[in-house]
Image (cartoon, rainbow, N blue to C red; front, side, top):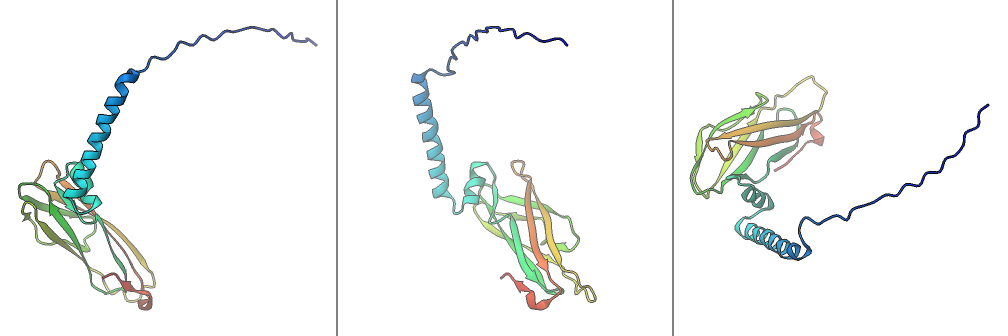
Length: 178
């Protein structure tokens, strides 16, 4: 049986010092300028818009902002009417024309299109959803349906919305959201 020998090897690791991308003197003024610019943008957004979502829309260049991109109708019983309203605000200086709507379910009925939202105005986008009676079915249903609005605006051609809620067979457990 062969026995192994241990061999000692001494290795010296040489590290070169890293050069900073910017000199220490230049970092301070650049960081101060960037921080000041960010603070100015946040202050402008806070005082020129009414919600955080609107501030985000303004900072990202969106012309149309929505009060909430996801709306829930809560819990309803089969056969109860379902209607939701999205509040669309035109934050631009020109009118925006909504030209189409894509609902992934034929149970969703958008309002008549096309229509125009004037500059600086808010318009209600009411969506109805059919909710058949479903007699004889003992199955609850969770709804999560996307909805896409199309605008004649190259800066923001699509607006994604979502409708959620539950349809419960037991009417005692149904509590619609106002």
